[in-house]
Image (tube, rainbow over all chains, first blue to last red; front, side, top):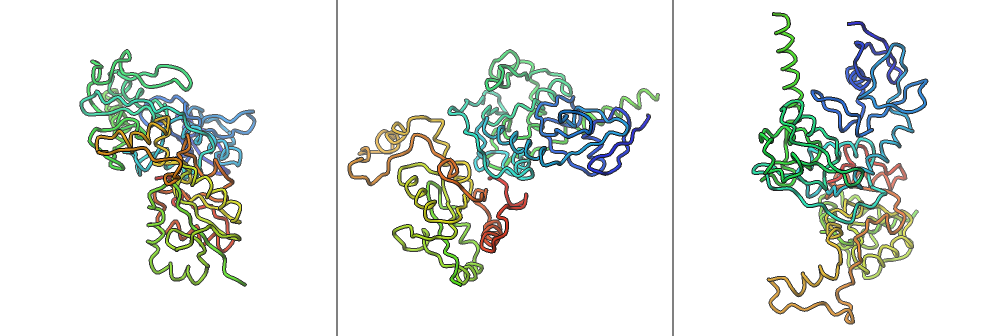
Length: 241
Length: 182
């Protein structure tokens, strides 16, 4: 495959054509913060945390959803981008009820880690007055919409890797929330295979295994990514045969 | 030069942050040499003093007493630190916010709960139980805060790092691994 050469934070990086800026940066050891991106499922560019500056373009662009090009000059860590990420993360915190001290994902939460990395040590916005009720109808798993950041990793893993298409997003703006099948309780969603992939990819504590308590969530988020990678290797082998 | 005057206050929180402060063990002896502790739940001082250099605020602002004390703290301190997640963003103390009317919560706790055999509401005339605010607030929603120390509780190491930086006049901003919520 033809390659391109670009600059990321002043470092010359070679990348295969078609690769995203985020992938190229990671290979070069430059970590671009992100929440919705997950190796092995499709790209949606929903969280906007991975925005980077590309010289010659008027607006920042999502590193996960922007393809590398020859002679591109990318900056991932400018003062403006850091401020942008701090505001975005604060808005994510203020949209739900994120109380790390009582959360199943405490210590294993990507939102919590990002806040520390990006420098969000307090939140300027006021969280919503009401707490949304949990869906605990599933035999093994639970869903707490107050902790959901709407990254849609679960929706994509369920559709693209498990092929069940149980999860979807209903409502708009602040009303947006996950729905199982046509909006029935998760436990009554007949398409759900109870595989747990959605739970394993959740970056926060919105989807969790019942019976796990504060800080007990130790999920393998690479499960879905490694499954997809293995499938791709398998199909490449099939093609060679 | 006189020693810096340090104070710590305990608003609506579980005192876990102060427990973590006590986890500093023998460093507390060094701290006692370096500062004058002028007000703290661990010192028997009734009124918050004037001319305080640094005050650590544990807990959220949940009732009228918390509100009054925090305003006093701000007026009388040069540098105020939100000490732990409750002061920083409300945390567990603010979990009552989505439940609505604090009057109903007080009635549930003091009068209606099944464990209350002779339950009665606190008498506002006697002023023993301070009136709850409609919503629990983070400290920075009430007064200006100069530095934030997240954590539930912040570890002893985190407290020491922050306090040392503040006392020596360095930037109180903590390193990423020391500023995690929870």
